[in-house]
Length: 184
Image (tube, rainbow, N blue to C red; front, top):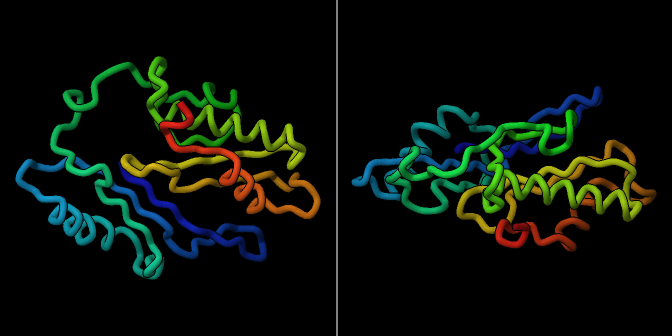
């Protein structure tokens, strides 16, 4: 799994322009003899540096490189189980942004599924509390990291008077424990 969280600003025409990379997550299988230190160095040198333009990386960029530790056993032998489904319809009907993770039809411990339902619960709660009329809640996670890497709320301009979408994010962080073990 690889995930890059980018901070954007909108230009005068409303076009998102990347400002910086906030977080990079890479979880990758490796040979038994490769140490975590060597894997991290190789990922920086052979993946991150050649792919991510240097101007987007800074001293505040967060790196989660194999954050759950060693990853020697992979594939079906290391991650077999229930069949996953990549279906957006399971989240918001035919509408809604989706990161492409697989839902496990019967395993709520898979964060792709449980976080999707948690995000929907949070969005419904924000609307029901009259903090906005409509919203999209996005959550991102990394294996081995207890809290979401990112919580994002877009009210599509329907946020309550004297509030911003950033204020809605703070409401979410203060009132919802979105750690995977707490949303199951």
